[in-house]
Image (cartoon, rainbow, N blue to C red; front, top):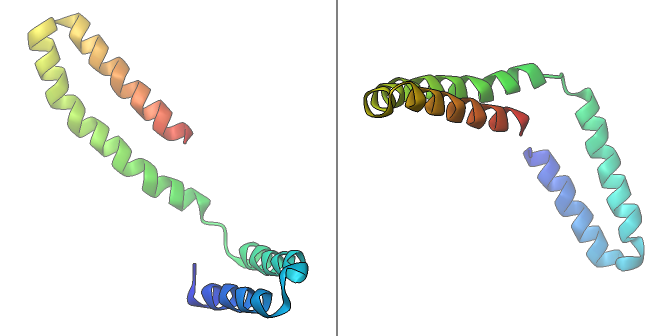
Length: 98
């Protein structure tokens, strides 16, 4: 939230305090319309944001997978390796769906 957004929100709250609760729906609607207009004017950078969130997840998974696979392979063999792989895939799938 930018400083301008905070100022506008404070102005809406101050107006509500002065005007009373009967004007609250109109004030809220007005504020939300301004926020929606600002959101529509902003360039879409959803792809970049998703990329920034996914990269640490992938790198972290790979970093943890190496020692976990080594330990699981030594301790439980192929079954341990399969279990570690399934756990890593499950965690990544859940995180990606969020």
